[in-house]
Image (cartoon, rainbow, N blue to C red; front, side):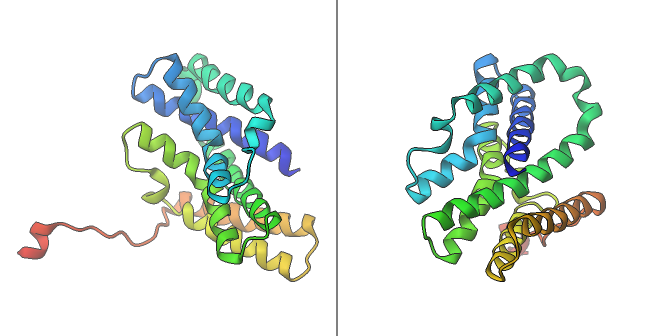
Length: 206
């Protein structure tokens, strides 16, 4: 199940990357690159960070074809993409959870300690979006809008706790998805976010 959700997630992320590139008037190469990095960048950064070589997508070339094709297809579907906004938010939330669980599993398989396992999950979940926004010259959305990175943190902690308690993998994943999706969708619906730190030297001197 996790594999199918992963494939859906990287497709959705690639399309979100293509839309961000389109807002910056990038050419076809730029659209393809941003789509690819948005979809697979989190896993790439995770593998480099953990010294996990070869990097995952290098062993699965179809992932490259899928993400680039999704990005280019977005150009053709651009006129109707705004009608699919809510659907993409759902796919993105599912992808965040799937990426987080996969990242935790990779780090655990390499026998890293708990803090590194959690950071591996978060990195896998959010770093593609960070790369997308940085390359498109905007403040990363995952760090300033409704609860997002913190949802990845909560999912990682819940998943690892249930695993430590001996809960079966299927029940663990189901619980992690239900909790993670509920929090993320509620955050979107009611605009939940963490407190914002706003610093202005002029304000503090006044």
